[in-house]
Length: 260
Image (cartoon, rainbow, N blue to C red; front, top):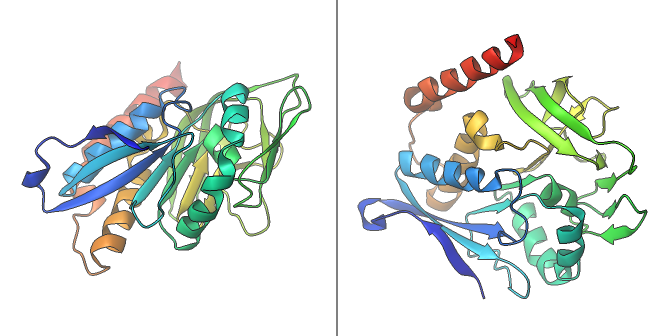
């Protein structure tokens, strides 16, 4: 049974609301993933909406019509193997959710589990949801660790992050990268791609968390969810009118980090 893990105080003070599923939030929440939850809550409230987060975990059912936004965090090989046995109940409704263009963000392990399979460091094949076409392999002798910067030409946006993963993910032909690697390893250290975009599903290896360093992604996810729920004509404040100072602070922090 799902349970509420976080919600806006005094939701009656907001004219709109978002219901957000945190997939396996009790098991897959490493490397600051809860910071992504807090950033989604902050962004929703700034845009005039309350937010309620429900953890959907082992033995829970996922109702694709219930949720306006989905977050799936990272986990180690052990947690991924544990949840893999419960994925069959999740796959069909989550697949419908994704194909309906509803917004989803998946980090590291969650990103991997959206694909076909993951071969861990011991060579064991972990069956994933198979909803999307990418796959992941872990060579077992090296990890991709360090700061990373990528550029998304479609959005004309630069994203900053920290990566720490043994898996190498390879995208399918119908998937686009979240961005082109400027420095760092990215999905696999060879193709120059980082992350995933498929419809309104976003995946990334960025930890840290991703959204606090890249608030435009949080803004995009929340505005997509609000306009899908309340109509495309819904008028929302532009990012620059609300969050320019927030983004400036993130960029200043990254410039200081690069100069060290």
